[in-house]
Image 1 (tube, rainbow, N blue to C red):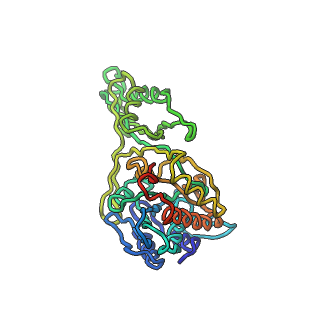
Image 2 (spheres, rainbow, N blue to C red):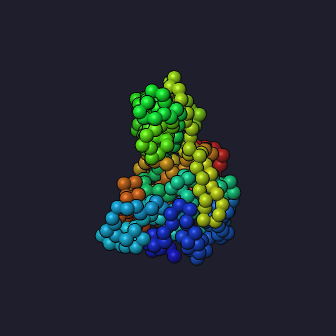
Image 3 (cartoon, rainbow, N blue to C red):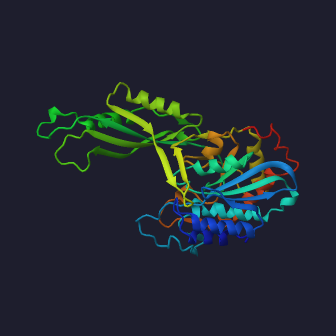
Length: 391
């Protein structure tokens, strides 16, 4: 199978919420085998990994696309979320843009390569649980496949993603003392402490970046304890925030900003979220929910070479800065591996009712991934050297 549209339709047909990707993983593994990938295997966490080796030694390029999708939700759909309908020049369905379209394009592109004419190794990883534990599954792939360059498939409008905000989720907990609401002065209302904490954090100055824009700190959950509650002064209250951070900001530095924002407020504690997900294989993924941001410098050798490769086949030689989290936080942000984001569709088309991707963009992405692979594994590029791989 070498047609990205046909493969993307088949992938959209198979529901694959995070933790339940088994059926689509089996389909991807079989497709990789039919496309000529060697050493196709499924690891302990359910990631599907296929390898194609060039005719000479060289760098290892890893294409990463995630298998899981978000739930279709309760909002009505005009097009069946798992129908894979093709109409109006679009492929409709959950995951069409985020990111089964990109996954199909990279699998087909890798299968079409005249790999014997190239130097190095192409690894294509279809990873699990990206939507709720971003980066965790890719980390396990990178532990077993040392990559010199990573390209993560996400909807970038066929632009090369060269920077990304980080993301952090953290919880605050306020403690007080319960009392009957007829005598609230005998208690210590934890909700009031949380209201003050939220107020302080909302007025806290946020960092900004000329390429990525302003940072974000958004309250997404707030609840007093006990709940429900009719007659007690609440003895506890918890809140949850989601933040978008800047490149080079560490978890410690981020928590330091939160501490400074709260100032001398007592009775309120905070910590980054600890996330767990049971995979369809039975293994458990775990992570602290802090995704580091990252940026590829304008002078980086890979950046210019990849943009030139896209331009050479008539595709946009334009860059993109991602405001959201992607698996590249693991490869670039945590491990310092040169990484980029690329794929068909736009973020505005993802996670919505009647999600879609343009068929023309899907096919262009297949050509784009092929060009990126040929560039990275070109025998004469010189980018496989230590100097060329500098991020």
